[in-house]
Image (cartoon, rainbow, N blue to C red; front, top):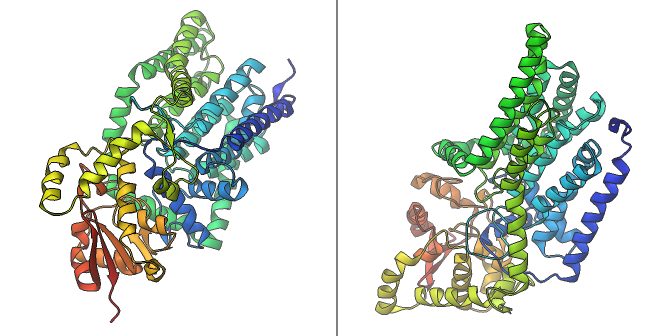
Length: 555
């Protein structure tokens, strides 16, 4: 085989990546009608971010984000580039194309074409299949934190690129590292660890990687400095990260430990591979009587694999409903991790690791695709209220009927309604993947109570719930200075009356949830924080038992 560092296979890899993108786009162009799946409010806050970007608001400065800006830009670009595709599918295609330069380089450095195609197939599955690896009897598309899938894909491809075969070029690899750092930075801040950890571990012992790391960091720093000087987005993003870190300070360790527990057997298999590789290299260094530095250099690759695995644990533990340890498959490209004296045993361990991670994802993808095609949850039904948020989407009959009944129960008026809501309170679960349908229905009922034309005078609108349901439904001007996701204990913390007043300063109209189904079951409700300000500065008008309209009083 020719030296793959000369890029001999890069054109072939580029053609294969382009083919996947074209086929994916063609399929969704021919069959653009998707079924409303799980946790669709997560898609709504991407839609909301894109709406605010389109309105000219500055991300992180004029509205606050729980991630970097890429997921929202991806959604906006998708709707403009491919208006005929479902927005989620278009946004995932944007992410795949952003990953393409790194993927092509990784495929060119794979040990063979079979390995390169396997990497392409797994990357496409990770980034383009709209599913997560949560345990559920739900069969359908998951809208849950789709940016986590792109972060997993970036980790997978980056590991394969770093540990791929062939000689290194400081200019090429430094440029690729800078690109990966910028993509990771504007995707999720924890993804930076995945990019940096293996490279810095290699750079400690190897001069070629020191040059690559220095150039990559320098190029990324210059790009960020230029962006900060022209827009201020970098410091605003850091401000959002600090605020979220303060709110989440007590959860990170729990999430990390929980992730290790859930992926224990995959972690153990990778740990065995690393330990075996370290022992073999150490034994060889001792037999050759290498110097201490020479021995350390011999251990560089397995130590870098360990650093990458730890960084992956940190990233994926913060990715609720993500893809688990799948991206660890990219670490298996490390030379010598599977070879050596115990090749057979290590190959078995690596095969088991891939089966536990990538195999589980492939099986789940097949099951969900087949079940969706067979309408396992019932016949698809076009529902007007769903079109408001998901144009072109249908709802499986098996999902629609229970939520219709649930929303109707919470919408009953008078003493009968009060009694029904008390009984129904124990049946509201945040983990219910279709809770959002009942929430959307309550919004639909509230909108029907508005006099014709009144919404045009609402000005800047916000909703005191997880996402701005009314702002999106009315396509209203968004309030300035608010979070696009209100998740108590994760994005927002309890506010003092003064903080609540300042938070509402950018809103002219506020929709307040007044029943449990449209708040956050199991979490502290937000509405009490704003009670004093709403009473003093707004005029209240109940619309339904679940929603009250507040309009600012002009004095």
